[in-house]
Length: 150
Image (cartoon, rainbow, N blue to C red; front, top):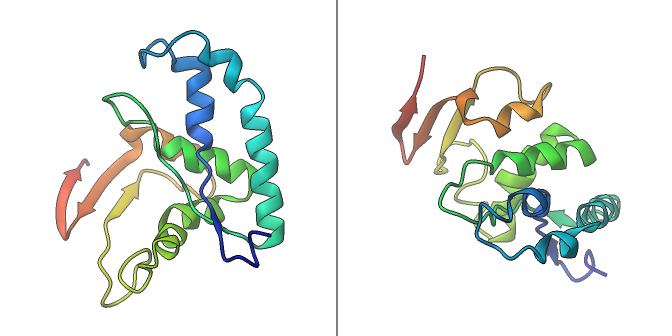
């Protein structure tokens, strides 16, 4: 089993959701839509099973196309299955754990490197805020402000 093997699950729920609706925009063949039908439901079940078993779970962001503006959707979808804090932790600390880099990044701690965002609103109460880039009012990347909106 995955837990005993120290394997991690890195589902990409947003990709499955968006493939069903954005395949034309992404330049894919129309045969993709029927192929992904039911996939999100099965992935949701897999996430629940893995969470119950205590499997380390990350958060993928394998979106297609030139605009990578829906990465927050992954956290929104995962928050509906788990809870908002666990979904955020999958995308931060757990991803660092999967890469065996959690000693260097993945959480806000003294001595660690961190990129940080500030969101207008409370993403724990409303995780869907993370799927709209207009709600991201501050991005600090590599210690420098990359985006700041008032």
